[in-house]
Amino acid sequence: MSGPEILKTVSEVRAFVSGLRAQGKTLALVPTMGALHEGHLTLVETARKQADVVIVSIFVNPTQFAPHEDYAAYPRTLDADVGKLAQVGVQAVYAPDATEMYAPDFSTKVLVSGVSEGLCGASRPIFFAGVATVVTKLLLQVLPDVALFGEKDYQQLQVITRLVEDLNIPVRIAGVPTVRNEDGLALSSRNAYLDEAQYKTAICLNKVLFAMAEKIKKGGEAFSSVRTWGTVELEKAGFEKVDYLEIMDAKTLTHPVEEKAGGLRILVAAWIGKARLIDNVPA
Ligand code: AMP
Image (cartoon, rainbow, N blue to C red):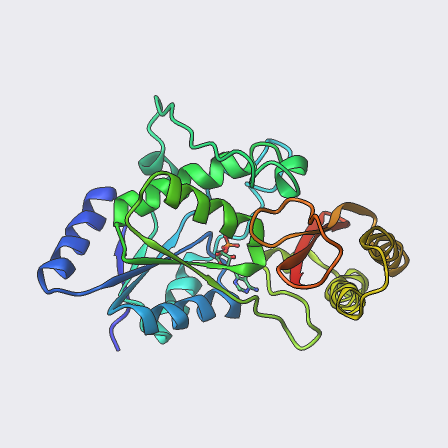
């Protein structure tokens, strides 16, 4: 099997895509920051069922990291990533340099209000502007039929769905359920930061969320009390700081008006050492 074609520039991507379009092929884009794991590969497998050709972008986007965050330390493993993508039948990898994506005089930002303001938007104020801007650029560079994003980053999925609708970008956004390991931990490139003791704490995150979802389904307990219970459990498990733990309307990510199960999402971001873990489950 020959490996994927490696595209480095916008004009290479455009030439590759027009070649496909000339053959009448449909196209799926899977945007990533690399350090690929089974979660990313599940996005690719889902993409393969939805289009003739899959392009995976690998770009650690500088504009979504604050100066104190882990941009420099973020794992970069392009050769290994390309090897994994060759195994799952990806035809092209788009891996631009930061200078290709952002010219020195770059001055445009895509700001999505509402859905991007709470949760991760509150604790990482520049994050969603960076994500929304780079995803808009990737979508306009590739112009795929469908772009796939993981529910692991649930708020990001809602922000992108919103911006594509608002800006009339002609692409379908598809969400893919979170892929977890045998302990229920959501796969993440940042799990590599965890030592053995921290891992034991990390695997409690999903258990607390699923237990909260059960409590909500059972009914009879106020959401505020379910939330307080969850926060205490996370602290007992060893999380050093909880950025947020919220029960939200699954689409608008605002607080639900009614205390009943269905159409809800429980979302969390919590710290162990230098790892900030996020997770979410339906309720
Ligand atoms: P990242 O490389 O972390 O920016 O992730 C690239 C894409 O893969 C995003 O759409 C993520 O939501 C998705 N993704 C990352 N981890 C998982 C996972 N465990 N399950 C499903 N999708 C994931």
